[in-house]
Length: 111
Image (tube, rainbow, N blue to C red; front, side, top):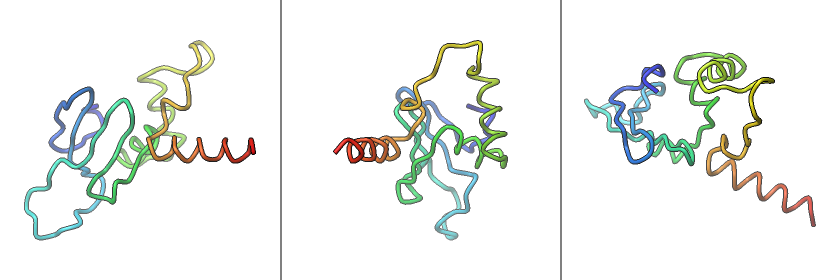
C-alpha cells in the first residue's frame, strides 16, 4: 500500500485510511486534509468526494497516474493473477456500489 504514495496512510481495522492526495482538495481553506479515503477488503471509498467508490485498478490508476491496463499489470505483479494462478472472483475486486449495480443488472436480466 505505501507504493501508492497516499498521504498520511494509516492502518485502520482490516485495511487503511489515507488522504486522497491524487485529487484536489474540495476546500482550499483547509491547511491539512483529513484521511477520508477508506481502503478495506470490502471496497475502497473516498468519503470527501461524495462517497466515490474505486476498484483496485481505478485506485492504482489515479494514484500513480497510469492507464487502467498499466494499473492492472502493476497489481498483477504484486498480488498475482494470470494463467499460472487460481482464478480470482471479480466480485471481490468490485467496490460496494459496483457490486450492488452488478447484482441489479443480473437480477433484471433474469426476469
